[in-house]
Amino acid sequence: MSVFYFNRLPVVGPWGGGNKTLTSLVNRLRQMGHSVVGEMTEEVDVVFCVDPRPTSSGNTYQNIFDFTSRKKIPLIQRVGDVGTHGKPDLTQLVRMTTSLSCKVIFTSEWARDYIGCKRGSTVIPNGAMPIFYEGRKDQRSLPARPRVVTHHWSNNPLKGIKNYERLYRETMSGALPFDFFYIGRSSDSLSECTFAPVDADVLSRVLPNFDVYLSASLFEAGANHIVEAMACGLPVVYSREGGSIPEYCGGRGVSFETYDEMVRAIFCALDQHDEMTKQSLTYTRTMDDVIDEYVSVLCEG
Image 1 (cartoon, rainbow, N blue to C red):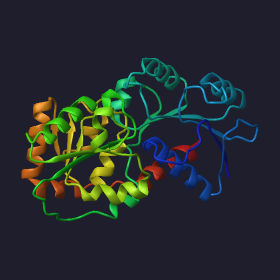
Image 2 (image 1 turned 180 degrees about the vertical axis):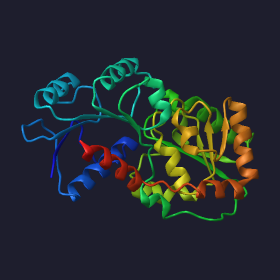
Image 3 (image 1 turned 90 degrees about the horizontal axis):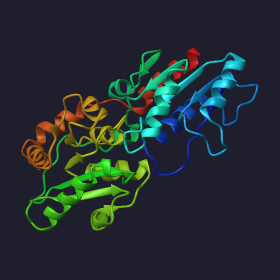
Image 4 (image 1 turned 45 degrees about the vertical axis):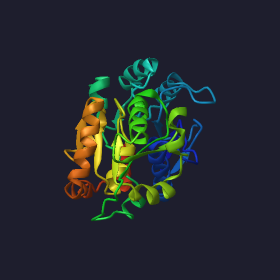
């Protein structure tokens, strides 16, 4: 059995997809009899760099690289954020660190291409936790006023906030014949249609009650929100500039670029609701599939 050092350990609560993956991975390794620790000790056999930025205790990538070089043990890096949401320093750090790590796991081909990684890389797309499949509905009747939903645990502008704000204004004015709701952290102007962030157990029960899922998010390295929506069987509408999102959707749903196209795409999803529901129901990738692939890379050493 091996001892794995993770430079980030999972946290409890409604965090993003990276934390969900990390939680599941740590649990699986421990179930297999391995140890997962948060300190670099002489017992460590493999180092997993979850995030190359300094940890809360001050450990840097340089510390990790020096440690693995001295001990001659593998340094495996996961790239879940490429800095596209206003973090150019992170982009440069990822480009530098991925050139030094023994193996690199990207969450999408788009992210790998964006970083330009040439060595030892594997793409492991995200998948939905199995609980999101439990509320799937093969058929659903649209109400007189359908409900469009999105969810993000960050209110970064590149999550599509401006599009959501305009959409909400137009639904409230009666200009559009459907309602819009936001789950997570949003802007002040969306507060009346926003539900607070919830954990996966609650979210998996709430999402199937909506009619269309919308993502206006841009340049996502590995978008969990869209796979959770498809796992629930919701028709999906998404930005063509969503980074990993078109890749994850794999031809399902309707894409858009401008705001007007976004509104037309929502109408398309409503008009072809049964067909687009069937499209989402063909999505079957789960977090278990993802973790199987992570374990394969980590345990190869």
